[in-house]
Image (cartoon, rainbow, N blue to C red; front, side, top):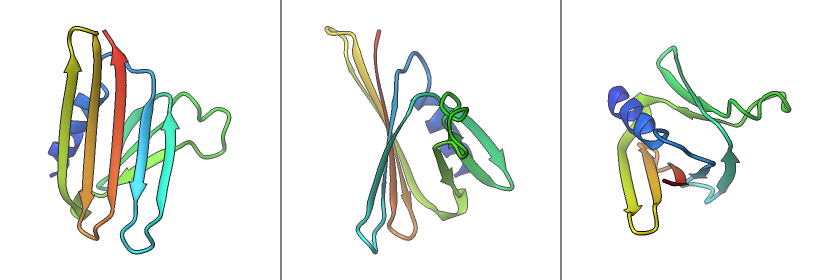
Length: 111
């Protein structure tokens, strides 16, 4: 599962991207957390995969981050939508967790 997560994230961030829209859904409290990242860096430490905003962290004490524990992941889906006539593409990664929570990351670009 760890390699599937890394591969999906690498595909999501490949090419030229402007922003990364992140939405986190929690099943129990029905909370939705949304934020935008303007850059990304993927790190692995102690079995945890962390994606953080490497462009905004200089202005913040703690950068915007997404933490993914591969042992808690139930399924990961990568989707690539392209409109070749307009030159617009959209990529999405959805990480479904065992507890029912869900992390959605989306990028959009031109080219």
